[in-house]
Structure formats: structure tokens, C-alpha cells
Amino acid sequence: MTTKVQTAIFPVAGLGTRFLPATKATPKELLPVLDTPLIQYAIDEARAAGIKRMVFVSHTSKPAIERHVMDDIRLRRELEARGKPRLAEELKEAAFCPKSDDVVFTMQDEPRGLGHAVLCARDHVLDGPVAVILPDDLILGAPCIGEMVEAYDRGHMVATMTVAPEDVSKYGVLAVTGHDGRITHAHGMVEKPAASEAPSRKAVIGRYVLDADIFDALETQAPGAGGEIQLTDAIAKRAQERPISGFSFSGTRFDCGSKSGMLEATLHLAEQDPELADVLYAYAGAHTRTQSAA
Ligand code: UTP
Image (tube, rainbow, N blue to C red; front, side, top):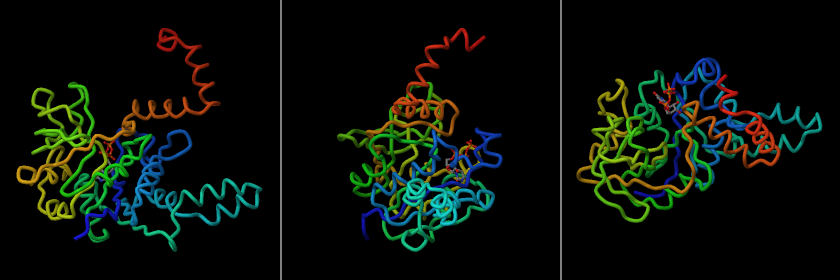
């Protein structure tokens, strides 16, 4: 059995209720940070990690995701005809081509939780461990899943970061037993604990490299928090005998499943673009908190 990570799973079948009404007709995963949809950042990260097969777990109500992800020859030809060959080329590079890329779309019939979405990918993965990437956790800077694939040895690895005590209840949290460089060893994991009951402040972020036995664990996983089949519960199942590895990644993470995280990510990227930085600082200079609150 290989330890090479050949498959990335992108669960994109959720309802995106925190972004309604924006997500009534537009999938959350297509909301842009500046001009690039969240799903594109996730795809670029998986490509940079050298992953071969990309499996999207989507829903029939979200066909726009496939439209974005796959190459659109007609649009490219139209752009070329209008004298925009460079834009056409950029779109081609970002998209997958059915002939040369290994891409699978499969459907989750109902949003029964992240664990259930990952299970829906089971019949489509290649041999060995799988990467799972949640597009609404945007990680900029060093590509997180690439760092994890490189550090991965065996078992289940989750990306982790230390969060403030008041924030632990938003995350899966590791029950830590020790540290070894960038790896945190844990013998368990609790989904969204109350601050007073959290085993640590090491929160799990939306990047995973999971042993293929995760699918067996998910098959028998009972619904957990929120009545959903939780991926964290399945990962934690055998953690007493086989510790979970938490990986401290070097990039900067933005919670783009929330409005505040989306705004932060947008400002972060705007600050790095000379033209947009001028707009940003001019706006900030002209508006004080009292003015904008008035
Ligand atoms: P979230 O819980 O952040 O997304 O799931 P959501 O449920 O769509 O959003 P809210 O909380 O209602 O605003 C993280 C990722 O997992 C996918 C989502 O599409 C998102 O990319 N997901 C979630 C599924 O594919 N299926 C599910 O049943 C649940």
C-alpha cells in the first residue's frame, strides 16, 4: 500500500447558509476573494502539491461549480476573437481539461455533513491516503496541503492552529499528548467543545491527509454534532491506539465561511496589489470608526 497522496477530495455540496442570500443561486465555493473564486485557490493548492486526481463532491443544485472548474473552449475562442488572448490563456491554465486532467464530479444527494460528503468520494479515489481540502478555509502563502503531503508518514494528519479560548467552540479541537517540531500528537479530538471543556486550543482547520481506512470509519459513523456525520468523529475513532498528527502549517488562514474572514482575506490581498492598496489606504484614511458607525 502506497503512502503517496494521489487524490484530493473537495467537498462542495454544503448549503452555505451563513452567506445567504448570496448563496441562494451562487455556490459559496464560487464566492470570490477579489477576482478569484474560493474553489480556484483550493485547486491551485492541490495542483502545487502534485496531486493527480481531483474529486469534487458536489450537489445537483450547484452546476456552476463544474462550469467554473472545467475548461470552456467557447468562452476562450470568444475572448481570442475579441483580442484578449492573454485572458483566454489564463482561463485555460486555471481550468481542467477533460482530456489531460484526472477530474471526477460526484454528487452528495443531501448535505448530511462533511464526513458523509467525504464518504461519497470513496469509489473514485486512487490507492493510498487522500487529501481533503475545504475551499472556504483559504490558506495563503506557503501551500498548506503541499507541506502536509511532504510531512505525511502514516495515519491521519489534520492541519491545526492555536486559537483564542473564546473561539475553540467553533472548531474540532485536539486532545494533545505531545509535540515534535511542527507535529502535535493527539489521542483524540472533540467537535465544537464549550470553552470550559476544550481539551486544548489546537483547532483543526480544513486540510486533511487521511489514511484510506477513513472510509470504513465513515461507513459506520453515527451522526454527531448538529445531527450531521462529522469527519472529526471518524478521524478520532482509533486515535487512542493510533495518534492523530496535527500539522502546524506556515501559511495564513482565513475563515472564508464567515463574512469577517472573507473581508479580512479581501483586504489582505488588496494590500498586496499596488493599485488596490492605494484605494484601501485612501478609504481607510478618509473614514474613521465614528464616521462609518454614524
Ligand atoms: P461548512 O459547514 O463550512 O459549509 O462545510 P456549509 O454547511 O455549506 O456552510 P454553512 O455553515 O451553512 O454556512 C465546509 C465544506 O464542506 C462542504 C461545504 O460545501 C464546504 O465546502 N460540505 C458540508 C459538503 O460538501 N457537504 C455537507 O453535507 C456539508
